[in-house]
Image 1: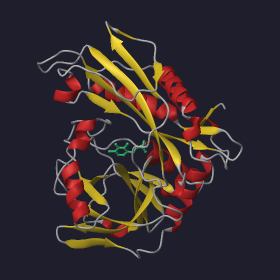
Image 2: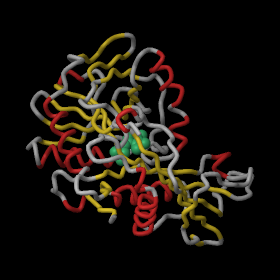
Image 3: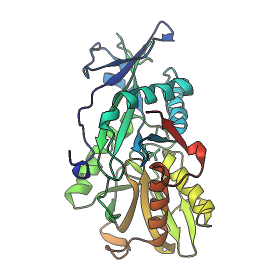
Image 4: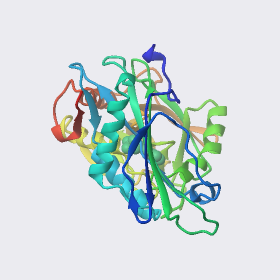
Length: 336
Ligand SMILES: *Cc1c(COP(=O)(O)O)cnc(C)c1O
C-alpha cells in the first residue's frame, strides 16, 4: 500500500466500535466487523442533528509503538459537546479505553513510521430511537471508526490560498464552539464556492460583526506577528482546537514567543509575517494569500514557508511520532 498517496477519505479497516445508551445507562462497548448500523427512521440525529464528533490520530513510532496525542483533550471536548446538546457524557477513562481498543484492533492499518501518514480516529455520538417532536432523544449510540489518512501535505508544508466567506458556519453563542455536524452542514456550500474559485477553503468571520477572523474551514487560524508574537483569535463561535492549544504552548516554551489570544481584524492583517490554519487533519497549513470582497488583502511568497510555521510544524510532528520525548503527558502509548 502506498501510504504517501493516501488522501483524507474512507478506507476500510477491520473493526468498528459500538456502544449504546438506553434506560439511563451505557451498555458495554463492543467491537464489530460490520460497519452498518440499523436505526429508527425517527432518530433525533436524522431530523434535528443531535450529534457530536471528535477527530484524533494514532501515529506509529520508530520503535514500533503507537502513539495517541492528547486524547484526554478530545474526551473532555466531546463531553462539553454532549452537555450543550443534551446527550449523555462518556467518562474520560471510558472514552480513552474505547479509543485504545479500536486502535489495537486496527493496528495493521496504522501507517508505518516515516510514511507521514497516520490512523485517523473518528468517535461519534448521536440520538436515536423513536421520536418526532423537538426533544432530546432518550437513546444514543456512540461509535468509533478509523481510517488511514495521508499526510495532508506530502513532504514539505505547502502554503494555500483562502477566500473570506460571506457565509457564517455558526451563530454567536450558538454551537460554533462545539464539534457538531450541523456546523459542517452549513459549511458545505461556502466550501464548494471557495473551491470552485480555486481556493483551498474559506475563512469565516465572526458572525456578529463580520470584521474578525473566526475559523479557517475546519481548522483554527493563527498568525505570527512581525514582532514575533503567536496570535490566536478568541470568539464564542470558535471550536477550541487541541492542535492550536499545543502550538501555543510550543511557541512559548520552545521558540520563546509571546502568545496573544485576542481579536484578529480582517482588515488589519498587515501586522502578520506568517498566517496559517491548524488542526488534527490540517496539522499546520501555511496560508500565503487571503482574498476578501474582490481583492487580495494578504499576500506572501507562495513558495516560502515562514520560519515559525516550519519550526512549529516540525516540533509537533516529532512529538507525535515519538522522535522527541518532551511533555510526557501529551503522549499516550497504545501498547503493542
Ligand atoms: C476539529 C476542528 C478544529 C481543529 O481541532 P483539533 O482539536 O486541533 O483537531 C478546528 N475547527 C473546527 C471547526 C473543528 O471542527
